Image (cartoon, rainbow, N blue to C red; front, side):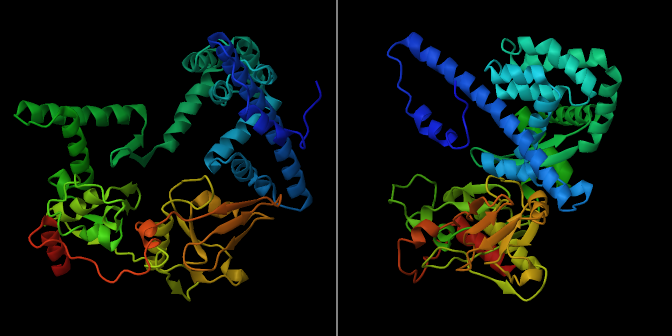
Length: 461
């Protein structure tokens, strides 16, 4: 079979997408299996390409005189952009490629033959990461022939079993070092909920869960009607924040919402979310909670109206241009982004602006560097995670902003001269703003409604 080249590869995509379906059930299953094997073979080819790319980049950086610690530092970011993945996944892909190509030839051969999936090959690499190259090759030789028949869990279990037999001390050291990775994270979940997670050493995690369980069981024994899970969640919030009740937390509510969304409809004093469809009315535009994402308009209004009066609350109002829907621009003559402008960028961008990254924003970044004449403004500003901001300083990287308005397109160019576009998410109300020429006034909330009472409390504070 003729080998594929860089010129012939792009032509495969439309051909595979337009594959003619088999006419019977058995033929369709055969096609599914063949396509799955093709995906695995493509993953093996990607691994070879990635390892070769890293070798070329490291050699170029060495020839350019970069310190050893900086050579190849941006390889994962470039791989991630090419694969339309986050930089975190890019690092995983590079590590996978290096291990398969240089240390695990049997797993690589099995992947190229379409036997295991890319994820099962990844599990083999993960579970042997603490081993020496010699021991890793032994695990590779022992398990590679079975990868096509093992489940994900079985691959992990068998790899750990063989690895522990070869080098039990490395696992003890790995567990000791893992404690340094303890952390807390927050992720949005469906139905306007969030998942607060903690990665803890086993003893601490078990102790924390046991304490929450005891508190919930004690409350239930005392006649509390809330469910066990609800009590554990409320107890966690109360103990972490130091408040007497979970719903009395002193919070800063960073609600980014159109004025129509905030005020709602005068004819809907109850605002129970059950009114008739108005064909995309501005008052039904979702709001955005910083750190979480979009939430329905009625829930946003309830968040403002229903918070207890004794809970301190801030509402940060970010206004949009009535013609374009863009957030109003802010500028500064300072070298660093002032606190207010930084908050503005975080509220506008919501997450790291690098394409496909999605990590929390840690840095307010000048798209065009300040030392190169870049302004400290919303048009030349973007929110980036720490890793993406550091990658920008590598040789050959550049970024160009769309200077028209606040939050336009940013074009990032990599050392290989590939360009990628990034656009800030549309702010709340942008869709309806584009449908009208101008907003002349906003209806006030109905007199006596919970929202009107809550706004009075906020304005009087």
